[in-house]
Image (cartoon, rainbow, N blue to C red; front, side):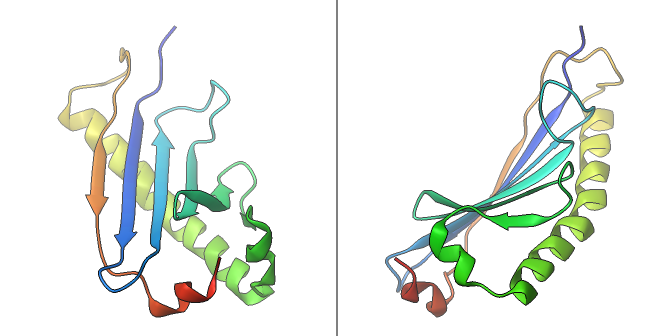
Length: 127
């Protein structure tokens, strides 16, 4: 049985002047199956999951109870981000497969990218 290629993008945000961290994990697989959605985004603040969105549900949802305070407009924006990012990420998975000569007989692959920037000040208001 062939395992899908897994491409993981970690968009980490760490604060120089802030005591909180914000990270988003973008995950894509080359083929559905194994209980994984083709594409997903999971957000964390200080190592605790705050939101989740994936290609199976097609929308962003809060995980941390305090994230329920965000309005409908915020969740629509996050859902639009999912929908805009998914085709780009799928293309990145195809590109990675081509560059690493993974045309179908792949065992398992993973690529990790990390981007670090300052946490916006408004995240200080959250626990």
